[in-house]
Image 1: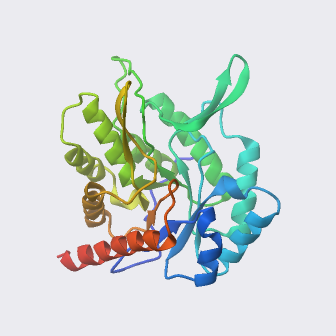
Image 2: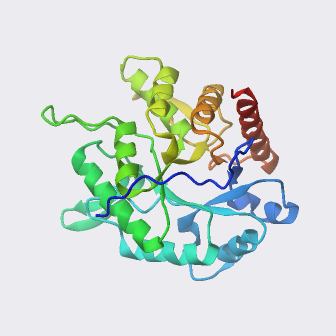
Image 3: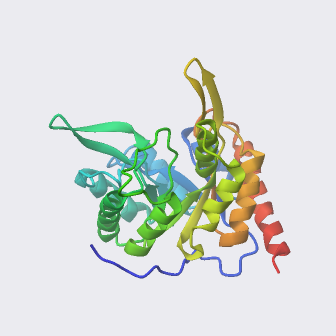
Length: 310
């Protein structure tokens, strides 16, 4: 595995007074975004939706690419899988990168694939990794393989976790910020900091009896990550679910960004600078103007942070 020095972040916006802000481009808005040519800095799509050799979806994406920068965000590389990166999946991603020439390529610090009873199965979910040295070694090897194949820097996102791993008392786990920082240091990858994911995990930890105020925990998380490692920020909504099994917060990307996450976003910008920012909305998708309104708020907050800086 190659070990490289952490590169200086290059977001293409030296001295910017506001972050570049994009929105997730989902099917209900395919036609409208091409027809209206709205004022947005970039679009993000899920890579796996465009792996086909041809067809309408790929044609629409190629047309959009004529007007907007595009970011490819994956959910299927399973970067933390002990079984390794699926070669077919990586080949399809490499072809898509060559076709689209995206601004960024990203995926998650998680696993989804593994051997069970001799068969390779897919969990169809972004399952959390234990923050151990062994898991870090696997993640680093897989991230390096992807970067070598794509010949570009990968952004790796912190994921939500709805279960926790029991750590061996003789080998205590790392904190998540330390785990991800070490990943960036060893591979040269960037970090995609999902502020909503950090907040959702903090809320669920509080419900599970972990001491501490959620927003303060999130600020400490953000303060523990090196500035130069962060290449993008995600913002999204979440929901609270209560049933006979208990209470939990779900990262459903189905509503506006909540006020607590906006406050944390301001803190993130104050620390990391004008990092490119994405508004995610994947369920209960509203009218396009609602997403553009959220994007405008992110841009305005960036301008306010920049003006307040000493």
